[in-house]
Length: 171
Figure (cartoon, rainbow, N blue to C red):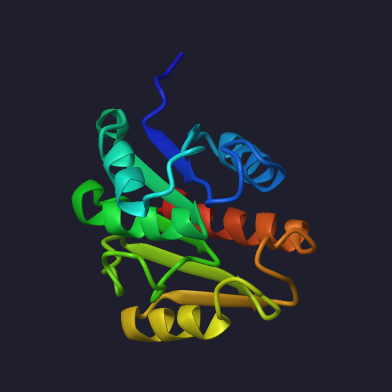
């Protein structure tokens, strides 16, 4: 059996778990496309920058293609860590950019492909933050009729993730 050379690392938000429904669905898409999947457990760790250090100390280096997925605070974590990890892609769900209490207010995405998905009715992180980030960093942006958790649009979200991965796999 050929070893897996591609991996997706999921980074959950502050009020969620490493293997919540959304991550499980996206992980299924990743596995179908030949990626190993890992979801780091940040439960009980409130500091976004401590979460970045945990991600940087994970065994990401064994893969030729690395994809980082981050939701809310996990979006911030994935983007900040991208400076060191240099993933092929960043897939960010309602990322916590331009938020009080975060050390880096405008993290630079270091990935060939960066896609953001945000809900119009996000009650936690203003959709304008993702619009500003996507415009500044020339990232793909999808705005859905949903709230912060993006649960109502799970089918569309998994389709967008599939398209995102297809860009990388066919490269």
